[in-house]
Length: 363
Image (cartoon, rainbow, N blue to C red; front, top):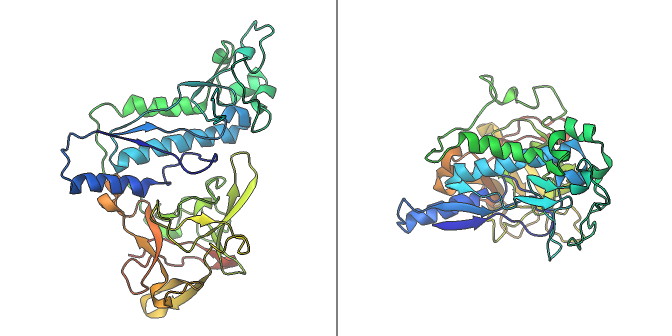
């Protein structure tokens, strides 16, 4: 078999099934090309949220967002052809250690012995933890037993000195129902209702505010992929005054973030990535023009700051290998730059109010 690890660059590497998934499909396709026996096991053997822990973040949304994204990662791996998923950390301390490199990450269960009933003179960090508090104070330590219980950290375990995070229950739900021998079936919701994209799940027609919670993927280094339109904050793009395609969101502690769509495919991921919007800093973001194609009832989104002919510089949907696995070719295809006359040209403008662009695959 083959073991795979999930990690992005740098310390800020929160798990998400939309990140790196095309590479999973490439690997499965490569195994087919090599005529590898169908009994070959493909196992996700190492993955975890970084940095620090949901408990340390001390916010209900942080712990639950990490739980849902962890589940999304597991399900995306299985849909792409993985045979299983190993939760890398069984139990860590409140900041995500100990770790000799100071590489603090998350775990479904945390040891917090200082919170146990009857605990006396037990520090919030034990002698073997040398990292201190690299990501600030541990906000969970300032919450009462009752507050944490209401946010999904059961009091009965806190009384034993253990913080069982929401992530634990998501993993438990999947392992309860996805039993050995299970098979992934083709399933992707193309539209939220028979009315099509006009009645998006998170953003009904005539509603200008996207739904689905904060976008915690609006940050440099995140892969841009395409999914059926559902109107969430992840699918809200602003064509700003500089003609960049810009997204807005928050990091894992709720600090506002913003990034812009790049102009060159990443050599490791194979598609366009989010990058800084500061042109003086790197010049890596694309400048785009929306060009109407009336006879086809759509538009082309054309990259302008490129030395390549504009007719070969449109945003395109790069089909997934492995035919997209259980999600199909529309479930997470990559965004890239290609010929404006190619069938891969990807986007239709559904709504151009307040310069907000919502796109979905062109049929």
